[in-house]
Length: 303
Image (cartoon, rainbow, N blue to C red; front, top):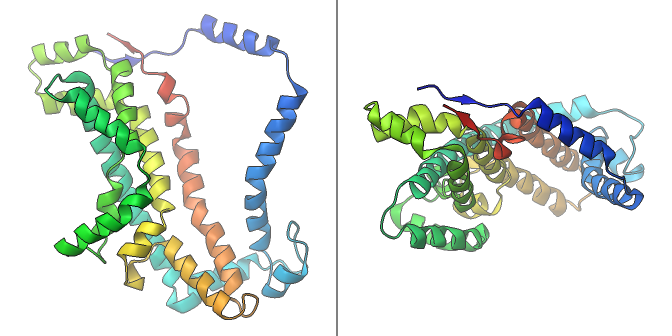
């Protein structure tokens, strides 16, 4: 039994390219897309520029251009040495929460999606309808009930208070079910069963390989959501040594506002720390983009 991913035929790709080249370009649409691009990139550009300025230059120079002194290296050094190097602990905590949550959520979504798509059992449609309904519930609405439950079982102020709620990803489960239906043929599963493979071995050695693009997509979505999560750690954690970078930076920002907002060196710490915190996410997207960018429209197999 051989399973290989099929590449799109060259003739089809060439026809699609010719059709795209023959389309008329709309100046209005182009300007609209440029405006949207500027809207989303402008805050990032401001962040990069602000991270290179001293405290005085932040408030005395134009916000969208560099100041007189290029203080990026000094700001980065101050971020990593402030308060005994607590920013490093925040980054490590964030990485641990995000990686464990993303890996666990993607695996659970793959298992659940495979079960819903390929196994007939009583209540399948009802349970999947409940999953679709759960997508509509904002995660922030569940934080307080989750806190009350975790408080009763003694999980508040532990890493599990962040990881366990992040493992539940209804949209990821929905996505994986749809992807399984398109990417995993029933005949392939039957062939594996005839060869004597058990259900867990079929999932591990056959299904997971076919689901790699969808798996990576769910992993990335959960990684970003957990990395940027602020409200859940704010409610669940009291120990500063367990804070993720979002809550830690908010604490620094609160300290700056107490001092009047424009005094001291806390503002550059917040700005530079915010810039440094997004670098791992950008690196993750650049490394994994080849899996998820074209993966959701792929899934063809050849037997």
